[in-house]
Length: 93
Image 1 (spheres, one colour):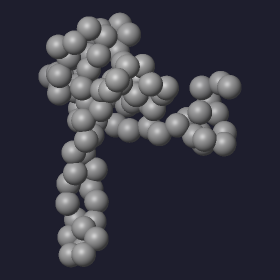
Image 2 (image 1 turned 120 degrees about the vertical axis):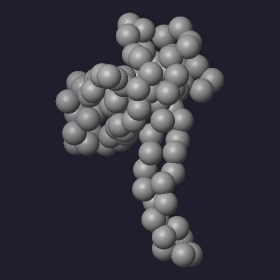
Image 3 (image 1 turned 60 degrees about the vertical axis):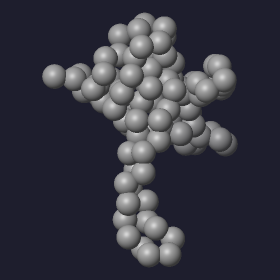
Image 4 (image 1 turned 90 degrees about the vertical axis):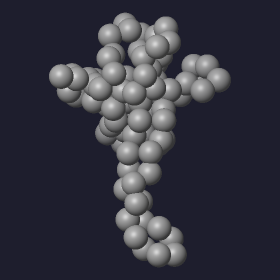
């Protein structure tokens, strides 16, 4: 299976892709990325922001706090790590 079919969704189980901001890079080859998504409250219908922290595999250790990155779901790499870096969209200033 090539990377093209995994990202485009033509394969049976397309992998999830999220975009977020790096909030921690203190670990070896691991970064924490915070993904903010807007969800509608089931009862009150108010739009809320919901944050999720994803543990991301960073093979080259080149992510810095504040970078905006695109991550892709992958097989479990450790107890908490299930995502890997696709690309760095924007570097922190």
